[in-house]
Amino acid sequence: MRLSADVIARANKLKLIMQFGVGLEGVDLNSATKHGIKVARIPGDATGNAASCAEMAIYQMLGLLRKQYEMQVAVKQKKLGEPVGDMLLGKTIFIMGYGNIGNHLAKRLRPFGVSILATKRSWPSSSQSSCKSDVSYSENGTHNDLVDEKGGHQDILKFARRADIVVCCLAMNSETAGIVDKDFISSMRKGALLINIARGGLLDYEAVLHHLKSGHLGGLGIDVAWTEPFDPDDAILKFPNVIITPHVAGVTECSYRFMAKVVGDVALQLHTGTPFTGVEIVN
Image (tube, rainbow, N blue to C red; front, side, top):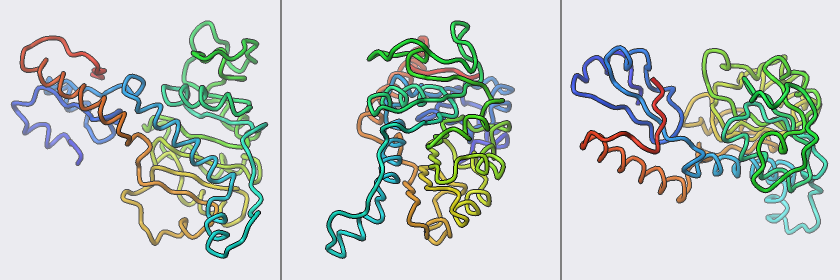
């Protein structure tokens, strides 16, 4: 359901719009602000949502590298020792959008022995753009010891050329819609993998389909689609090197339990007039 300006204008008793999660694409923020309605979301870092999404990205990477579809076929055909898959060890991963999910992803990828490139709108002042990190990894690592090379929006094509796997972790807005277009995918290494656990609109559908058909794109893993629910007859599903999951990256017992508690707490706080805790007010 979308909370449009028309819906919000008629909600004359509404005090708070709260997203059970992070994404607020379905809320007209300008209209809510105009009518004095607070809009809140639950930061994924505190609830396990970001960690859940990071794990899903790794699941999709491994599924593509190990040729999940071919393995299922081999089992049905009673074949052993095939297919010959690949591994994460030694791969270069480009995390496009280094927020909470990107940080959790980098923490989990480090033990696999990968190199990590990442872009972010703005890095902390202690971190210089596009510079090598000389700090070793630590268990509670920050961007300085998790990312080998950092950059901004201007570096996305450069990093795409060097990556074996590109992971989209960007927020969806007017600037990022369709950012993974024909030029971007063409700049990726032939055979590289593309993972999207953020929003379907980040990827240009025709560009993805074209590069799957040509064989330039080595594999696609997406938890989000251009239109949802995903069309089971979509041409993209016919490729064996595609893994699609039904928007469940953050849907885990752990993350839902934590988010439900936050919702309950905020409902009580709204009723008693006490300050909200556990949420981010965005307007």
